[in-house]
Image (cartoon, rainbow, N blue to C red; front, side, top):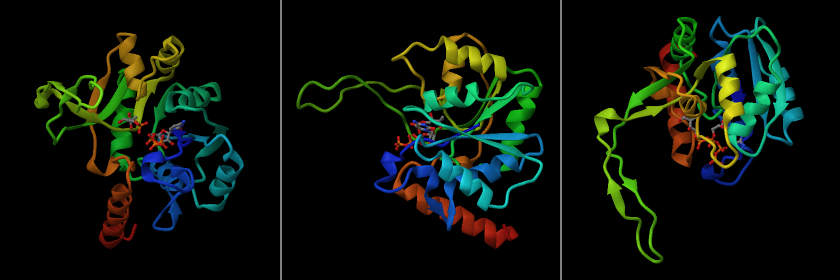
Length: 235
Ligand SMILES: Nc1ccn([C@@H]2O[C@H](COP(=O)(O)OP(=O)(O)OP(=O)(O)O)[C@@H](O)[C@H]2O)c(=O)n1
Ligand SMILES: C[C@](O)(CO)[C@H](O)COP(=O)(O)O
């Protein structure tokens, strides 16, 4: 499932982020191709901007995609979590493993996708690709009026991981995690909801090229990665 219903506020004004172009092709199409590159992926559910489902269907029809993959487009919600739940509700019967992948991570390599799938197939209910954190991270407290935020702690960096997508799940566990979620206590990733069920979340190696396109500089990096791939292997 590819949640793609975000606006991309941090990227600046323009079309919804997933529909913006990277080297002339919409970011969403790059993300769809990245997931469909795995031979284990039989269906891609795109959760489209609420007013953009028809446009997404046209995009999918207009771009070359693997014939062995089926596609379904559903309109998204107000938050990533809501969009994922709407995608889950639309999943047909007979699918036992669900990968949730940000449209905003268009360049994830297929080996990362396959690594996540393999770990779920091996029995993990929730699997997350992760990388060590390069910066030191500070925890801050609430700021007093007119004051900067106070630093309250410095978590030990060696114990921190930056997590990416696709995050892979046993379907029933993911559904249970979303159904148990309390309004107003959402999580920024699906694995966070599974943790609240006290189910184990397994980490597998992430990849630098699975970075999230969030701010304008990320577009520059994404186009540089695509140019390097083209130069290296004619991608
Ligand atoms: N209501 C939403 C919000 C986000 N997403 C998706 O969740 C992924 C990760 O979200 P993020 O990178 O934060 O995207 P945006 O919400 O678009 O970014 P911003 O917060 O800058 O607006 C993206 O593929 C985005 O399209 C979604 O499907 N539905
Ligand atoms: C799911 C995610 O990409 C994992 O790092 C991240 O939490 C999404 O956060 P966003 O604020 O919705 O971009």
